[in-house]
Length: 346
Image (cartoon, rainbow, N blue to C red; front, side, top):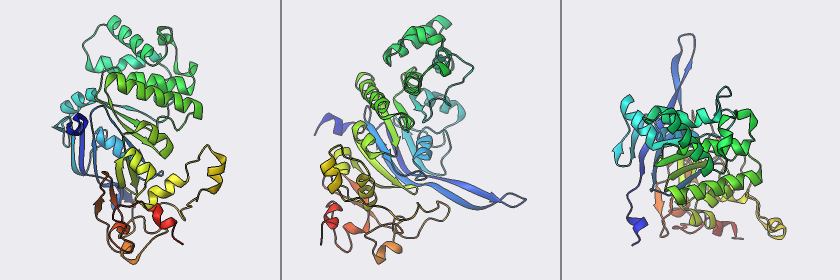
């Protein structure tokens, strides 16, 4: 067994739940709850990347904020480096912030337009380190060098940078206190394709150099594949499939994963023309009143009667994938085989 296999996870989430109350009427009484995250299990190993993918509204960003305890969770437990942070106090959260940082989706709104980027990058140091102003400036300059920028940029303001440069600066700010974990919430979705590749390569390089772990949140499976060691596919508040990145990408076990993959373009036009495109009907249901049974059954092309009434149990495959789908235990009994085998049947 390899050393990587023996490594204790850095982050462990068990049955993580976050429901947002819905208030209505003049008295603002609670009339329901939006089940943004509804019983999620996840683990992230030190120096590794868990990619989280799914449509908008699936709960990915909320889960990322729960992992960092930016918002409290309603149920389940969270551990960071063996420490239970589920109900951490304010002083304990301050220490946690040093160990776990975040890169946000929109680099323009994540910087104060009135402050220089040097001041913004040094801000975590003012909060977590006892350093002189010169020491903070030197550390900030070193961070700019780390992400391919120069000390001369310290005195500039956010409006003087492109989106790709600002996202590099956001990564520099997240890493300035040497965290063990960085949550990347759609960090490349607002960038053009060539800049996306540059930022992804930078993240991979920094991970190899610094040993930092990532929770990488995105809606594009092709992006997630290139940066992740493991992939979790999230739908309506739950992870429906997760496992090693190549296993999930090349042999999807859940119909939702198969549909997401069919939307990923292939650079070879001949192959692209012959691919079977799976178009899901309808929108993702409301998290306020999710469907009974399997939450995906209202859009699933392989739906069975059992799917409408019974919540599917987790099924584990030989190559380390966990999938929640009745197709593996009922009907065709795939028993861990890829769901693509069904699409090829006459």
